[in-house]
Length: 187
Picture 1 (cartoon, rainbow, N blue to C red):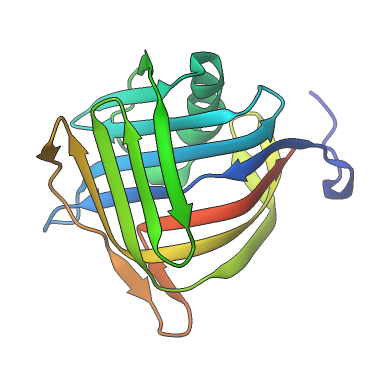
Picture 2 (picture 1 turned 135 degrees about the horizontal axis):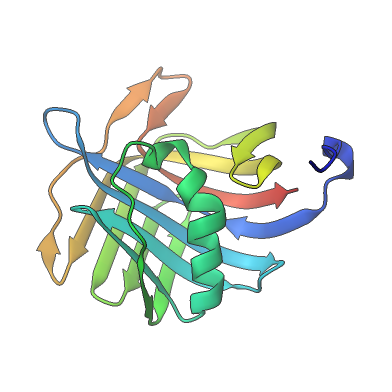
């Protein structure tokens, strides 16, 4: 078994942004999950990708399918937000992913026939941990996170049902949809 690496000696494996969302129905069941990646640099290259779970199907869209497959397998499968979802081997699609994001207004994504919108930024704050568990072990993560009030997903022009859950306090609002920037993963 490899010896754990002290957090101060970990090397950067990815720098970029990974906004995400979960939509819920009235009963509190997840109806959709999306992970949007804007990778400025990583040990597997750079580019954009979308990982979408809807109705038991996982789709991964990117111009760089090798990068996208790594993001889905290495990161997304380990995220707490997908635990309990029926997660099958993804359909990986080579297609352009266009992302427009800023922490004032929100995000707009177009990937194949998928359209994602997020808006109503509630807050902007720093998050950092040296104890983020992924399948490959413990990682360090730092980022700026901005929870948002609303998000929509459409596939082929049809809206995916569900809504964002907003919680927390006025001083520290939370949401099932969020933007990130200045995201750095270290292993």
